[in-house]
Image (cartoon, rainbow, N blue to C red; front, top):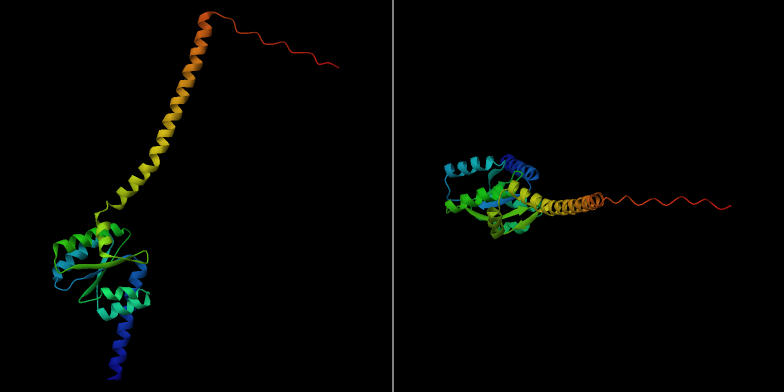
Length: 194
C-alpha cells in the first residue's frame, strides 16, 4: 500500500512539474472550465488554438491548486471549480483570447474564469475586451502609421519651405537678369597699414 501511495505522489509531482514547464514556455494563459463540453468540441478548440501556436490542457483541480501555489498565484484558486483547463498562449495572447472567447460564446458549458498575462491576474471582462482587439499585425501597423504620420508631415512642410525658398531665389535671379542691371561691384581690398 505504501508503494502505491509513493507512486501516486510521484505521478502528481511529475504532472505538476510538466504543467509548470509548459507555463514557463507559455507564461500567458487563460483559465477555463470545460465540464459538460464534449471531447470532440475540445479537440476542435485545440485544433483552432494550434493555428496560433497555443495549446489547451485539461488539468485536475488538485494539481492546478499545487501549480498555482508554486507559481505564487494562490488568488487564482478561487477560480477553480469543476473540470478546469488552461489555454496556454503562443506568441499572440490576443489571438488566443479571440479563439477561446469565440468558443465560449458558442458552447454554453465552457466558461472563461480569468487569465494570467505578464504574471498578473486578469479578470474575465478584460479577456473579453482583449478578444475584441484587432490582430497583433494590425495593431503594430497602426502604431507604425501613428509614428510615421507626424514625420511625414514634417518632411512635407520642410519640402514646401525649401520649394518656396528656391522659387524666391529664382525670382530674384530672374528679376536681376531681366532688368539688365549689372551685378554690384565688389569693394576693393584695403591695404594693410603698417
